[in-house]
Length: 396
Image 1 (cartoon, rainbow, N blue to C red):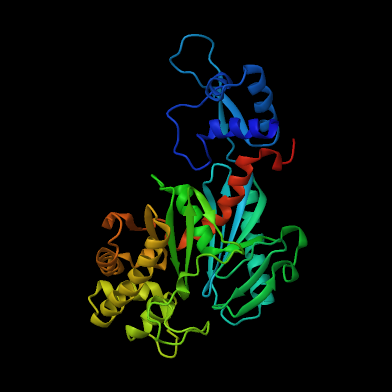
Image 2: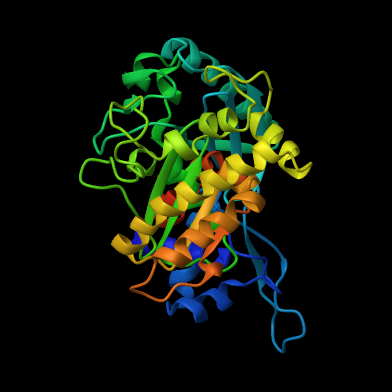
């Protein structure tokens, strides 16, 4: 009961979550008691504990313009507890540290060609980046209380931190702890599309409760948020949209099947059709920026490639709409940066094929987070856990 009450009080001060918009005025202990329905004495005891755990700070008066003795303002601490998010992509490593309000305080990204490199080598470099990010956070007065790693692969619903497969990295059955140099800082892995979807839900101005989040990088993944909860499937394999067949007798995919969406709307496929890649390789530090540049300049092969990719993506999303009945569809990752050229053909395909339920073009939109979604979601996941259970924080 006390754990729940600590969460309720912390949520009331934070505005029902660390990612809410700023209040017009801060709350006092009496204000919190009125909001949560607990006695002032109970709230005062809970506030004292939250201050001791570094979650809240108490400052100047909070009740400007009101009759009576003013209370002292309670705010969520911008020092102390923090979450670290890490991101391993095919072409980069990333790190992000957020404070207890969910605000990013440290961003790191380095370009790395990680495909087919040994998992141990990649994870050692990720650990070094994590250590640098934590050191920068410490200089800001932040203490990392949890670490989550976003990976472009399947993470089973089981303890142990194992990545079952990450085909675009060339990984299979990789256990993070076996390769992480510091056993005290091993991060918890999670699929990048899942974390991107959670970040979208937690940070949206007006979040819908049931939506499909499509995340594209070297591969294509999707995540399902149903009634505000991430749906991972019976074994954690939900969301493999990239391997949904859109042309059953089509091109053979690396997974072994034919006609998978990745072969028509994946980054390599689009670059190939745009004439910007040979044998799956492109000589550009940022292939997505190259595609956007060529499309913006009216390069016809690139425009046709993006139109065709949007048509294939729309076909796959039609099946998702029919099966899940979502309130919305969100294009994340690199798709968000190419949305200007993808959206018309995706929307046209959906309009033509979604016929058994109401559908509006506005239900499909790009993510404002873009490629930062997964690493931000990884960092904020720790903060959400702390908000739900402040006893995870060490007592002062």
